[in-house]
Structure formats: structure tokens, C-alpha cells
Length: 208
Image (cartoon, rainbow, N blue to C red; front, side, top):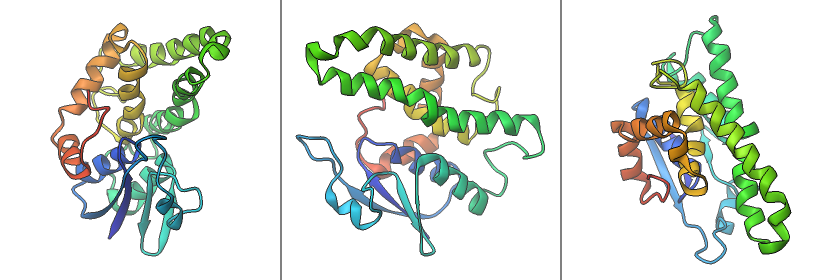
């Protein structure tokens, strides 16, 4: 059985959500961030040397990285659900969104957080960071125009992978300025499986 090594207020929440959407059995091993540093506890390093979450264990395997975990679960347990047929152009779009989430969209949001810790020393970087955030959120917003989800009206694992970006945008950017994106976040947060994942994973600061 899959075990999710779940860190509060982290990307591992979306792995719980994926498993709930697929109605798969799983166990949770919970970890709490340090209340002062907000870093993961050292116990996670006993699972994987990086000490990061999400990480899953399954049949003796240890899998890290959200995109890799989603791909692993889909290939081994998805049964073709929550992703397009691999022979279709829609699958290429699906893969593009999977990689875009962490490869492009998260970086400026993380930079905003880290640079803000520098105070005045970080101010020269702020215009470029804000420009990149607007660029990426604008792209998502435009892509969602007239659609419920990233692949038109078909909910998929790509929505789960990109969900953290949409949620973080509510905390570190003006998500209301991107109405299609904002509606998408509220739409996926209303899904029963999303709510079930919150119930199992515990309080989640970005469910807003």
C-alpha cells in the first residue's frame, strides 16, 4: 500500500487529493513544520536524504517530486483515469502542464517569498519577480478562458499538479486579478475528493 509522508502546508496535500480522486487505499505518515523556521523536521531525512515532502513509499520504492509521484501513481494504479489517452495531442498538453507547474510557475512565487526575507536589500529584484508572476498567472488565466479545467472541461492530474500554484497565488499575489484562475481554484476546492484529502491530511493554510 502507498504511504504518503505528508508535511503540513505543503505540496504533499495534492498527492492525498490525487489518491482520493482515484479512490485508492493509502496510509499517511504525518510530519509538522518547525513553528519558527517553517522547515520540515529532520525525521523526513530518514525516508529520503533530501528531507523534503512530498515523498511516497510503495512496495519498497521511495519516490520524490510531485510530478514524478503523480506519474508513478497514474501508471501503476490509475487505470487510464485522470489523464488523456497517450496517443492523443491532449496527452502532450497534459504533460506540458505537469512540467510547467514546478518547472516554471512556482519559481517566481518562491523567489517572492525568499527575497521578501531580505527586506530592503531585496527590493531591486521585486519588479522582475512581480513581472514573472504576472506573466505565469496571466498565461494560466488565459488558458482557462471558457474552460472548467486545464484540459477544456476534463479534470485531470494536471489540475492537481498545478493546484498548488493557484492556491499559493491567493497568498502571495492578487489572484482576484485573474478571474478564470480564481474560479478554477474555487471549483477544484469544491470537489468532494479535495475535501476528503483535507479531512485526512489535516488543516491546510492554502485552502482559501
